[in-house]
Length: 324
Image (tube, rainbow, N blue to C red; front, side, top):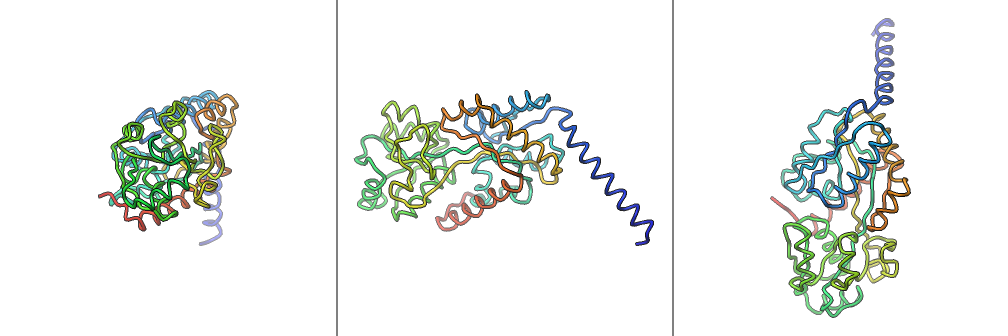
């Protein structure tokens, strides 16, 4: 390469970097869509819509939420993976984003290679609940009963490989018990059957079990986070209650198709950070047991996804969880 070519190359690189910076400063110049790969009404959808409204107000450009449910979130996730990496299509993700590739034969995406991380948006602990007729009031009593009746205690989940399934497998393996899995096609019916006594227990998100717990229809034993839930400050963590070090928490976050300029990722991360610090919004979600949260950088969230991916892949292998 001669001197003239080198100067030309450096000039072109500088122009490209300046253009990218200007593009990021002006971004967004048109509506941005956030694909939610799940049905409307769940935590991922509610958080995404609330943040979209706050972002619309703060950024002066419309942020639209588009629900694309189907096939354990694969439909919407694959759609987002194929979108142009220009910052105008983002994907709302949760545990299933990092988990599904470990349990589905052909997921059609790689969470580490096909997407660029932006930020966490919230953390939601799960709560271990039992039907009030089950003669246990603590985690230690549940463990003792499960050991006395190996394979007889039934637990409900929203389906194979779902967050409740993975949490129960993690718990069972850690404390050395075996229980019978009863999978459902969704969380609502699973919860109803635990309330009705058809199934004995389940891990459920604090936000969806709260009303039933307060009505006495479910008995909570402990929460799955390492810190207590503000909704139930007197309820111990599973770590405190008999399974040292246990943690299984639901996360929500935002990613973009791989190749999206880092400046855009940082801009959106910063805007999400402002949104989740809005007092009225934070208070509204704390009342649901949801902690709004943002990452310090896109790289920090990418590392978080990698940890979740590796952890769930290991659990899926050890427990033999696979969906064809």
